[in-house]
Image (cartoon, rainbow, N blue to C red; front, side):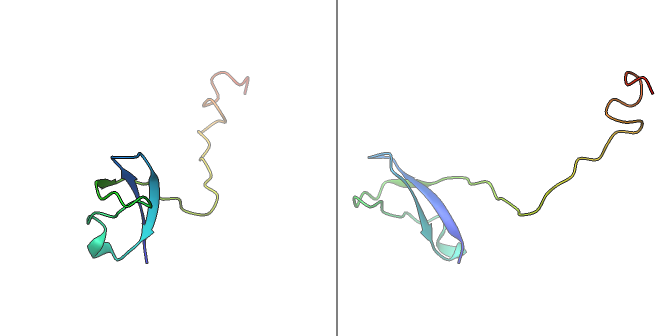
Amino acid sequence: MPRYEYRCRECGETFERSRPMAESAEPAACSRGHGDTVKLLSTVAVGGAAETPAAPGGCCGGACCGG
């Protein structure tokens, strides 16, 4: 089940909830019971290492590398 991050407008608490996607936009009470919360936009982390392709001719295209 996906996890969503919310912030309480009353106390400022940021918290997460696991819930179905169909319920993601519905209010979620914070741990203090406040119901005035908003869903935060979260970034998605994808595992693995990304490689940056090298420019032709090396790090600077060959113009300043003496090559």
